[in-house]
Length: 230
Ligand SMILES: Nc1ncnc2c1ncn2[C@@H]1O[C@H](COP(=O)(O)OP(=O)(O)OP(=O)(O)O)[C@@H](O)[C@H]1O
Image (cartoon, rainbow, N blue to C red; front, side):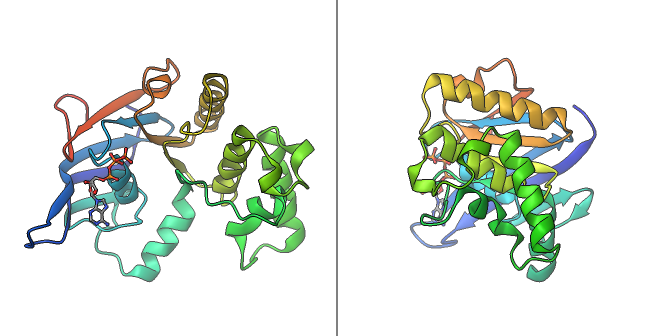
């Protein structure tokens, strides 16, 4: 693996601790993620992929264990610092995309930049670059509800890239795509890796976890990564 970017050391996440409905979606997971690699988290529904992705992206905190981002332990950082780490390090592509209807592709892509610290012109320039990179220039003025599934997915990726994150975290990114579009999406991830970005994908789609374009697969089962996969 290339130089380490994120390390999880013995990370556990518990919900409803001590109650009859206690769950451990992530149970004593240790995992190193390198700079510029495509890592796939695979496993059946409910095995803990989304929860692990949320821990990697500092969206939820571990109940125990350490999470190191660029060798800094983020698990115990106060929320205001954690928000900064999250914003500066990660771009998220959620399963449900969470695009905003009624506004244009370009406006959706620019959203994470608000409140604008870099000025409207610079923000728009960056959004235009990303829409071009993702083949959306001809759709930039369209409202997102007028787009196809594959186009919407690419808008979500452009939006995830607007903060120039080091890593893209994508949850079931091919869920609404056919085989051809899934292949195109994998090419986009490969291009991002070529730009030095880390890509972590949670999926149970064989088109993704069997793709020759990925570097590594970690298989989850009942909150754990199976031996030899981490
Ligand atoms: N906030 C929560 N409160 C209680 N239980 C939760 C919470 N989040 C996740 N879980 C439980 O943790 C387990 C793992 O869920 P998770 O969404 O991480 O799995 P997954 O592998 O991503 O599943 P899928 O492929 O269906 O999205 C599930 O049993 C789920 O119900």
